[in-house]
Length: 518
Ligand code: GLU
Image (cartoon, rainbow, N blue to C red):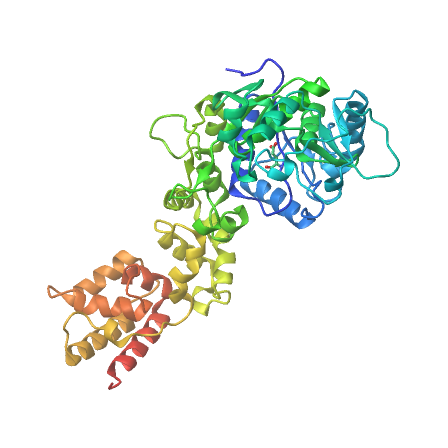
């Protein structure tokens, strides 16, 4: 069902003040899926007006991360240069200052906002937050008509018709700034309510007076977020605002500005918070929080895309693995959950493994090479230098691998000769004589066997030699001699890849180590 008669236009508006966070990626993904589901348009807009904290590097990280995830935008900034796609640009707020100024002047002239020249505004300040004592401010300039009086600096405040009443009650009641608080505020004055519908959370309301005469711009050239976002969403014809629920407190302010400007209200959908396994808001404490960290750990973009789509949304049923096209087909905002979404790394690992198993061996090999290089196995020995060997290693690891970054550690014994733990070479309670016999047998078979040879044939040959006795006597020392590891794939799989010469070298070396008297 199409959720709007107007063509759907949605956006994400990341601030380039940090790397692409999984929360932003989730918001981007839900907007993307919603747009694609409705044949709509997905816009990326860079909110870079906080010039002190915004950087080009962060912007690049965010855009690169979205591209890597496969969340491509229909309109927005290009990765390089200043050209943009689409005709609702510029798509960076720093390029839109004249547009904001035009609307600020309009509101000042209409007396819907006012220039506040108060002393305390000279210092740089953030948008007012109703809980902040410093913002309980009744400005003597609020009824003055707008004139650019001299060159004194001013901030621009929204002229809230409910504010004076609320302020008067507050003055009567509060004895100490600590008493400013949502519960106290509601008890002393409720007044007119700003009501809005949220597709995820249904009806929401907020007492208008509590927003006070909030600041909308630090000057005519420095609009703050709540103002800029309203202007941009209007100019870019955004129909649905889909973003994290941490923005719910901003929505009433934005609605007041939308009304002051005579714009039409978009639909809202606030997405549930992303939580760590302990149910507190996801943070660095829980592990990686930025998309590039997941990329660096060897998660596949398809897996992270699928996993992220299920962070707070589920089409119902048991299915967890959904290709992109199916996600687009199934996505609906109505099925977004209200409660927090747990970021379960174990599930992500499982899902990544599933996607790794979907790769062809060639694809997996080329995906793994950078990780092998990183792990220091960039110059593999002669025996695995050939691509056929690499493919065999990939085939061996594909069923078990969860993250590409594990590949180096899991397979380094193929690339460099192992260090041996003498005790590990020994099977159960074998004596030194028995071990010496085992090494002799191994060397005898390996010298005799034709290689390359399939692992089935190799196994047959070894079992013939071992006869009916305890197979571990031969196979355990062989496996450890080949891999040096306590856990590894079976000896014949390793042998098939290493080849005879390398295998013999390792078995001889293992024997030498074992026979050294301790
Ligand atoms: N710059 C805001 C953020 O990154 C955008 C919020 C919005 O979507 O309105 O959270």
